[in-house]
Length: 169
Image (cartoon, rainbow, N blue to C red):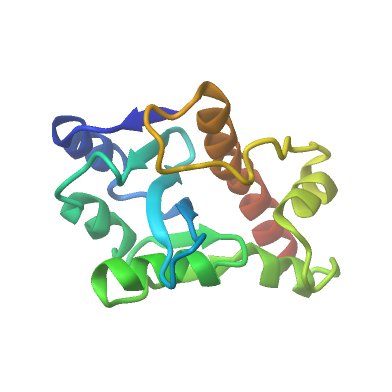
């Protein structure tokens, strides 16, 4: 995963993702002792690239939001309620169209509330590490373990999406 933490790096990263038919999306945030979540990182993967956008470091999120709100691109998320809340908090809008892998998995016969790790295990046969689930995403620099955890979330989401989509077709 390429970490995007400067405005200069954001434009080429967003350009590399622009025009994709779908993008796997996940967010990392802190929601302890706050009513609203504190967004820290947005991970996005296309079929051939993975980027992590550091919301703590970036000032102008417009190029990223243009990607997230592109109606010609399906945003693939797992159980996206909290992710969508983040985007609504940042912009006052909810991204569309969205493919919810948890809902799609239920339609394919998996448990209705299957966790992301459980779905990756069932569909891809991979056990995801959970070591950075509860970590301080506001602290900089992000650790190698945090970056690997964040990259895994969208890397495997690509494969889960493709397999569920094939199963639904």
